[in-house]
Length: 169
Image (cartoon, rainbow, N blue to C red):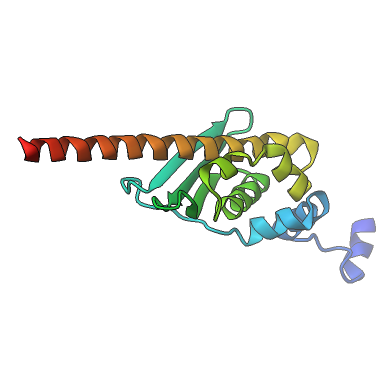
């Protein structure tokens, strides 16, 4: 009976679409900054991993299954990060913190980028306590990208020295 009456009143008998429900819940539980970075992620993509000016950090969180690939492009003369991009497999929070991390590292030196802490990201995005682990991935990815860049740089310099030594002989 109640179902029958509900169908006569506009909007009562109809079930909202699942995407409308999901978006409504997402907006209620997360701060607008998270929603903005989720709906409009910045710097999505990837660079050529063989480029010696590119460092790649690939990290994952076993607790929730999020995986993040963060890449940085470094100007060799200034040592500053000129560009950054990411690809993330995970929840909305994971996408949001990846997007924010790429924005924050641009224009910084490696040491300045390493000073970015997960607590700063979590505080800026107003992440709920159960999503704090997501912000740790960004910090780990920045470290991993720096390590990869420095390894490539050392290998590139070693190859250049070997080539110049062979020419001299």
